[in-house]
Each structure stands twice: as C-alpha cells, then as structure tokens.
Length: 329
Image (cartoon, rainbow, N blue to C red; front, side, top):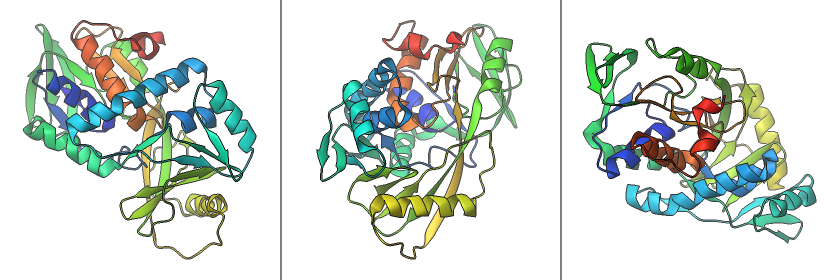
C-alpha cells in the first residue's frame, strides 16, 4: 500500500506494479504539490543553481537517465528541449556545470544545455494513474498498526491489510501508529511553500531561467515560477510573491512587461536536511518504507525513488540506496 498520490507515490506504485506486485494507492485528494510544478527533469540546471556536490549531481543525472524508458512504459510525454540561463553571472553558472560534468555552451551571452528534460505534470500524473487504474482509491489514512507480517491501515470508514506500506505523504503530518523513529523523521520534514503562475500564452519555446525566475512551456501556454518559502504550509496565492515573480520573469525574457491573465497556484513540498529524498526502509518499521521529501526535485527523482523503494521491498540494494536511506539521519 502506498499512502499518497503525488509524483513519488505514483512512480513507486507504477514501478512495483510493473514488477508484478499487487498495489493500492490511497489518494487523499486535495492540493497536490506535484501538480504545482513545471515538471522539470533538470539535473544540469538544478545542480548549477543550487551549487550541489559532485555526488548529488551524479544522482540527479542518474534520475534523469531513468526517465526515457520509464516514460515510454507509463505513457508519459517527455520533452527534450534546450534549457538556457540568461542574466546574472553566466560564467559562474557555466563553470559550475562543467565542474559537475554537464555539457553546456555559450550562445550570444546565454548559457545553453541539452542535458535537461521536462514533463507536463497533469499529463504525467494522469498517465500514471490510468496505468494503475482501480489500484488508486480515494481516502485518508487515519491510523496504522502492525498485524502479523504486515500492516493494518485504517481509513475513514474501512481498514485494509497490506504486506508492506510506503509512506509517500509529502509534507503531511506523521500517521498515528507510525513507529517512533519513522514518526520523528516524518515530523522533521521541512515544509516549503512554492508558487507558480500559469498563462495561456506561449512565452518561450523552451525552458528559460535566470535570477529569480524561470519560464517554461506548458501545453499551449507557459508556466512561470517559482518561489521557495521554507516553513510555510499555506497554499493560497500570494499576490506580492506573484508580482515579484513576474518582474523577474520579464527580466529573464528580456522583453517589456505586458498584461497577462495569470492563474497563480500554491503547493507545499517537503525537504530533508540534505535536500535529497527519504527513500527506502523506515529505520524502525518492519515492512514500512518511505518515499518522501524530494524538495523541488520530485519529478526529476520520481523513477529513481520508485526503483530504490521497490528494490528495498524486494530485499535488494540499489546503487543509490545509501544516499537516500532514511536512516542516514
């Protein structure tokens, strides 16, 4: 049973299902941070912007490399377009990319890389949910307890048995009945509020980034993002934050500001202390696993997290199991 139907929950469920496991995904409904995103699968730009370590960049690249086969199997539309950085210290971004092993080039004062990909979150989540079919059930888990070799999971109105439970609950509170160490890990996840704007007009042919904002294609229009506000759990659009994003976006695009009809959206992501997900066995919960806290790299790392958790359930060790092991904290 996978508790949570965001990108990590759905990717884990799909990976388990295609390996032959019977799965259930409990979808609590309500705001889903995976939909409040641009669908970036961007190991190069994310590594450069955050100045991550070589090891983290290698993990991000591995996450990207799993996507083509995963997308084909799941029916997810994967876009391979250039991604560019404009403004600010272009040379510094270029130096970081090269030092981390990514390919990039300078074109007319802009830094361009072909290392990054993109999905459209609504299409991707729809495709994953369609493959899972009746395995996705609406409900909210209100408690869990060990029973025999597995778990009894209590929903509002019914209880379900599971041989293993995967908590993919985002930045939500710990579930009653969670073992103490798992409870502590979930409660320590830092909520980060993010806001994006969606417009029906196409503003860029590919992802364009710069200081303070990015603009990315989305359907026939574009998405403008994104804020990162640690400690906030509210999701109502913030007009002041939206205004700052738009000002930064127009600077990135290099055009004069124009009136746009913008739909602002807010979501809450979870982050661990080192910015990497918690993926694998809970430290004190037999047959309890975590798929949590990817910060802003949920789409990038979805298939990798799914594979790490599925391997752990099957008693195997993945290449990146130690890096993502919840017990590292």
